[in-house]
Image (cartoon, rainbow, N blue to C red; front, side, top):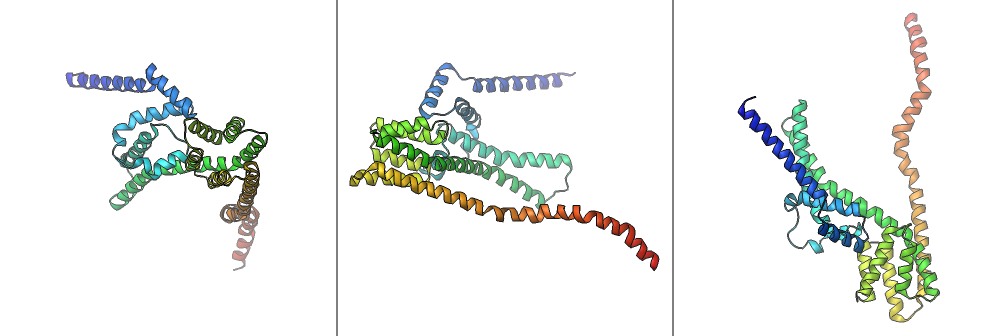
Length: 313
């Protein structure tokens, strides 16, 4: 082993040790940082593993996240609102999101190019360029699809649990509790059935304790969830307080309307099943059924009828 090979191996060893030390440092933050992270988790009701994972990804991708992150106006952008709809409140989520998007946009085409080159694929010229552009588009729009999926799942959970929450709130208000106390009690009761809705109601109570106006706190609830039914609930509560009508009666009517709307959506989804099953039935089930039913008959025709016809000629 000559001197050049020894230096090369030493350089590889130093790089590996440095990378391992950097990753271990990111995975195990110091006590002050851990305490701040725990306080942030307690205030936003997020799980430690989720917040730790976001912080680790954000620290790892922060140098490349600046390439795609907007410099100004992000706080009022649509992506920031989608984060709120998905229930992502960590300060590291923005850097992690844009860092992952940048890495996938650049990394997928490079990885695909290396794999295609090493495998000896016949893709050349325009075909290779089209494949690289497809991988880059998949890397750029993939995080958007994942975020949209998270938003859809969370909004559906809130929509399905909101009529039950209004029923519980109606019982609490009729029993003599105030609106804030009723929302806090409903949040405790819905903790296991709908954690997303329970967290949102707790945030409303925290904003009210901090001195925010009730109408503003409820309006923030509608903005954070992005659910049309929650926005209608906020409007109903504001109008009931403004005109002096009974909040319990308004809640009962609104809960009945939401329950009817939930049933209608379920009926609509059930009515779409026949149309959705049409294409798998035609392209997957019918060909298999025809092969099973007509296969033995076609084999008999091939074995008996065709030789007989050939012998007759």
